[in-house]
Length: 186
Ligand code: GDP
Ligand code: FE
Ligand code: FE
Ligand code: FE
Image 1: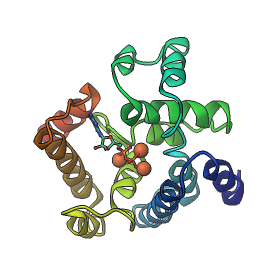
Image 2: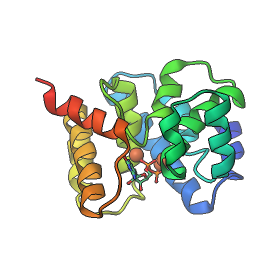
Image 3: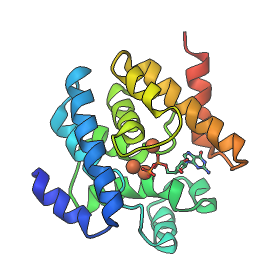
Image 4: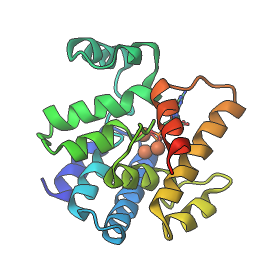
């Protein structure tokens, strides 16, 4: 599916600001894919579709979790956690994406997971550092991403979990598994 068709399809499912974020993720992901020798065309598709479920109805998403027998822990969480796994399901069923690397990059773009692939890290990092993102420390993460993807990914995960702890938010178990895996790596 070509870029313009995908962009037109996602545009009507999200506010303008989220659409501009998606364009930023797309451009960043393509650049990182070229730099770290992954397929830029696949990065483009994963990036365009990564937030497709962000504004989907939460009750509908939970119904999909049950019907498709996705991780039942998802039922205790809201759209912020549901939109990754459900986004992957929409990409597969509605957009006929059958490439598991694209689907996993969408599925884990919010929480990460243990033992991420380079391709998954590219989508995760691009989501966090795209040009429209503005938070304290983003410039450092952008600089890291130009030097070493693994270091940048580790810094992104640390940033997100630190933020969640400091604002006293619950942490999804898969995010913890991702963090623990990174801290135990050589
Ligand atoms: P976005 O969809 O482009 O805004 O970005 P993400 O999909 O990466 O993240 C969506 C939201 O989920 C952000 O506000 C994150 O801080 C939040 N988030 C990420 N991981 C967790 C987690 O483990 N627990 C909770 N409660 N929120 C999380
Ligand atoms: Fe997201
Ligand atoms: Fe993210
Ligand atoms: Fe996003």
